Length: 104
Image (cartoon, rainbow, N blue to C red; front, side, top):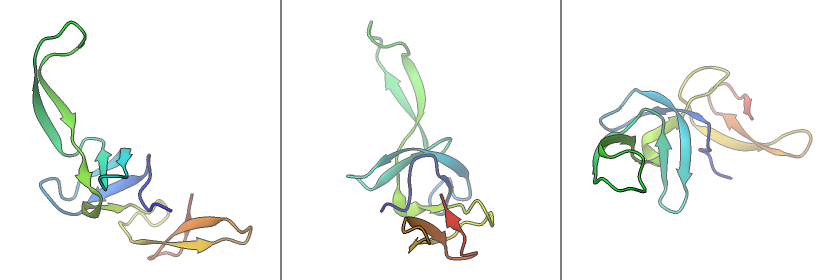
């Protein structure tokens, strides 16, 4: 069970964007990285090509290592560590280590 998933709200805890919040757009499991909306913006020079719709200097989000992000708990609103726990119905859910609430 992955702790960070797509559409999770995260806080950056290290690097040039420390303290920023954003939503996870993609999870690159094989590389251990996540792409967070509005964080780690890089500029790329794209050569004109008939197949590309946007050329020139393009800004986009680059992947950031998963160890540099922390999940934001929706119930207590704090960046917290999460663990796994079995619920009463037998399903497995992520649980906030601060407020002990299950995360869907």
